Structures are given as structure tokens and as C-alpha cells.
Length: 112
Length: 111
Image 1 (cartoon, each protein chain N blue to C red):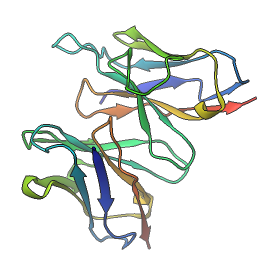
Image 2: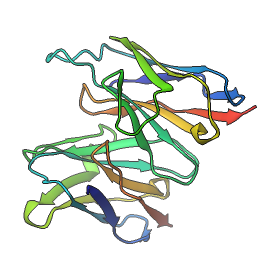
Image 3: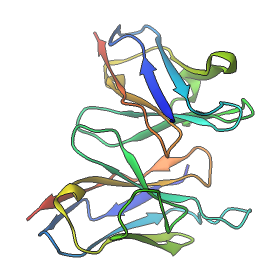
Image 4: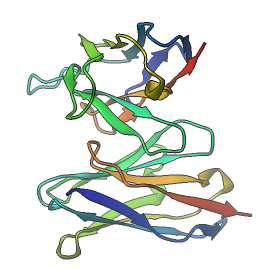
């Protein structure tokens, strides 16, 4: 199974600060159809996860554009340009290229 | 409006079988796959398995021997069954299409 390694496990930020989260895959996530199925999700405290970004860099409808995703093959990054209070929670990367799908262990974003 | 809702028992005895139902609305199961994900208390997300739009399934390698996912397209329902439960199967169980998530159901396995 594909292993996704997220770093850092915890991230402390002030409001307005820009932060990045890394997700590295144990194998390439480039699918034979040419797409790369790496998604980013946010789970706020006490809530179900929500999809932020799909296929590396596509913003899900309704997600603020301070969120952006980049990367290819095995290395991916989620960037938040100007953290807001509502962004606090745990971020997960998830790959949907190779079945069984897998999640990273999560990165907790907290206020400094 | 797309919705997914999990239902099932909140307390199950160890060694027994867990049966959960995911009822969807706003889309057809023949057009989209549905995934089961679980989350033990205070821990991360674990992908359990998927039933594809064509009815085929894929399972987490670690759970494959005791997990099955089926569906009834006429009722817009997806079913999860997992046998030989242990206390470390205690978790919130979610069904999701990834872009939409259910509220989850907290299942406690009692010894």
C-alpha cells in the first residue's frame, strides 16, 4: 500500500502567517490517465473532514483561495497564505491513485 | 443537495459483527463510488474500503479478511459489515464520496 508521510506533525502559526505542509508518497501518484490523485482535507475540531483541494492543485468549490496545492509524482505541498482562525484543525493528504487509497497521519495547525 | 448519513448500533460486543448503513441522497450510486473511513478517538483517518459505481470493491489490506461492503442501488444505501470486532475497532465511522462526508457514527466495541 502507498504510504503518505506528512510533515510537520504539528504547526504553530499566528493569524496572518503563511504556512506550508508537506506530503511525500512512497510511490508516484501519477495515474496512467495522466492525472495525479492527491487530495487535501481539513478536519476542524468536532467536525467531519472536508475536501479542500483535489488532484494536487484544484480548489474545491467554496474553499478560500488562500489555500493552494502544488507538487508532482511523490512530493506535494499545501500552502495557506495568511492563516485565519477558521483554518485551525488537522490537515490530511490522501491519495486516490492506487487502491487501496491511503491517508497521511495528519498535521495539526494550532495558534501560536 | 448531496447528503450521506451513517446509521447503525453505537455499542457492539467484542467478537461480534458490525453492520452499518450509509444512506445517500442527491446522487446515484451507479454514478459515484462511496468510501468508508474510520477514526479512532484522538487519532487519524483510516481508509477502510470503497464500492465503485460499477459495484466492484477494494479494501484496506489490513481489514480485507473481515470487511465487506455492499449496496442496494434501489434504496441508495451502502452497507458495511466487519466481523470479529475488537476494542481497537472503536472509532467514528464515516461514509463519504470524498467531496461530501456524512456526520459519522461513533461505534464503541465493548469487551
